[in-house]
Length: 254
Image (cartoon, rainbow, N blue to C red; front, side, top):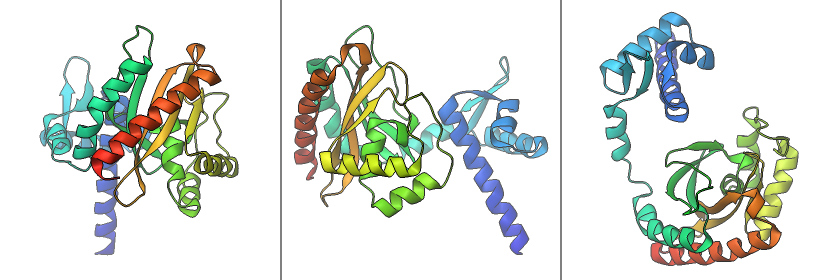
C-alpha cells in the first residue's frame, strides 16, 4: 500500500513539474521534458498524453511542441488570491509607468521565486518586456529580495538553502550567507535593488506592499535599462514607488 501511495505522489509531482516547465519556458518538445526533468521516456510519454487528453496541454502537430491548454487556463481563472490587490494596483501602476517612463511590476512570492501578477509597461521604445505569470528566481531580482526579506530570517535561509541558486550574471549573489546579509540590509532600508543581477543592462528598485495584518503581501518595482538609471534617478523612482505603494495599501486596508 505504501509503495502504491509513493508511486502516486511521484506521478503527481511529475505532472506538476511538467506544467511548471511549460508555464516557465513556453511550448516544449518531448525531449525538452525528458532532459529538463530527468524523466524516463516511457513515463514522460504517458504523462504528456494524459495531460493532453485532459486539455491541460495542447500538442502542436506541426512543431511537435506541447503548450498549455484550455484546462490550464480555466484552472488559473478560478484563482482569486490576489484579485482585489491586482484590481486596485493596475490603475496606480499605469499612472506610475507614465510618470516615471519605466516599467512597473507587482509580484508575489512562491517558494524561492517571485511571480508577476500585474505589469504596466513603459511608454518608451526601449524598455523591460515581461508578462503576467512570469516566475523568476527571487534571489536575483529586486521584488524577489524584497519578498524574501519579508520572511523570518530562519524561513528565508531554509528556502534559499533548499536548492542550488543559479548565477545569472556576474553580479548575481548565490552564496546563502551573503544573501542573508543582503536581506538584512533590505529590511533595514525598506527597499531592495537589482543592479544587473538578473539580466545584464537591467536595473530596478522595489518596495513592499503590506496587507491588513502588516505583513508584506506583495512587492512593487520600477525596472529600467541601466544606461538611463544612475543612483540619483533610482532615488527619484524610489520616491514615486513608495508613494504608489502607500496609495495601494490604503485602498486595500494595509
